[in-house]
Image: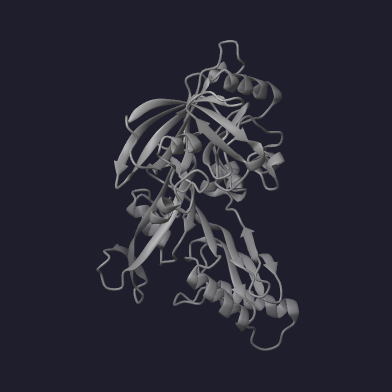
Length: 438
C-alpha cells in the first residue's frame, strides 16, 4: 500500500514508491494514479469513476513526495501554482559520484523527444530547447559519494539527472545517464520535500519524506538534517560544525524555529558558542557537552579560532589586501552599529582583515578574516571603507543592490581553523581546517 502523508477533501499527498510509473504507460505496469483512485474508492465507498488530478510528475525510478488533487478546482489552482512556480518549492536529495562543489547553481537548456521519451542537454538555439536551472549544496560526503540537497527551479524531463551528469557528478545507480551504474542498482534520487499553497485555504503546506536503506543507509543522520534544513559539515563527540541557512536565528532565545532548536531535536543537548546574523549563512559551531562549551568559549575569547568569510562588495578595495582598524559603537535599541576612525566613549576596537579574490564589473569578491567579533562588524566596517556588501539593505547601497538584482546578503562564513592551548580538551583539533567551499 502507498504511504499516505496527508489527505482532505481537496488534496491527497503521498510518498511515491520507486520503480512505478505515475500514470499508465506503454509498459502496462501498475501505476500510482490508478492505485490511488482505487484507494479513494474503497476508503470512501465511492461508486463509479473517481476523480484524481495529476498536477506534477516524478520519473518512474524516483520516489518521494507527490500531491494529487481530489477536485477539478483544486487541480486547476495547483496546476497554476506549479506551472508558474508560485509559492511552490521542490527539494530533492541525491547521492552523486565525482567531486561536486560545496554549493553551485546549474543552468542550461534541455531538449526532449517526447515520442522516444529521451532528453538531452541542449544549446539555447536548438529546436525545443527550454531553460533549466537548479541549485545544490553538498550536505555530506561518505564512501566516495556526496549527498546533495537540491532546489529545483524548473521542471524539465530528467532535469536533475541530466544536469548532474553534465556537471561530471552523475547520480549513483542512474542506469541511463551514469556509465558507471551497475545493473540492479537503484537510482539514488528522491523528492524529499514539497511545499505548495493549499488550493482553498491558500496557506503554505510542506511535506517531507526521506529515503531509507541501500546506498542511503550511510547518510541517515545527514538526511535527518536535511529534513530539519541542516547541513552538518563536521561532527565528533564534542563539537558540531553546521552550515547555517540564511533567514534563520541561531539560538533558541532568538525566537521560534532556531538552528539550536532544530539541532536539539536531532542531537539532544547542543550549545551555540558564537553567532551569525540571521541573514548570514555558513559555518557555525555548537558544543555537544559542557566541557566542550567551556573550551570553545575560552578559545573564541582568546582568538584561537580563526574565522573566515566570503562576501561580494561594491567596487574594488585598495589596497587589495589589508587589515582595517576602526571603532564600533552599538545601538542595541535600534539594532544598528556605527563605525568611527577614532576612539569614542562606549565604542569598541574592531580589526577586519580582507583580501580581494576576484574583481569584475564594478564589484569584487573578498575573503575576510575577523580578528575581533563585534555585531555586524564585516557589514558595517566594509560599508565604512566605501565597499558595502551586496544585498545589505541596512548598511549597504540600495541602488547597487537593485542594479545587481540582489535577493540576499552576500556574506557566508566559509572556514574555521583551530589553535587550542595544549592543555585544552579540544587540543586534538589543532591544525584542523573546517571549510565550506572546496
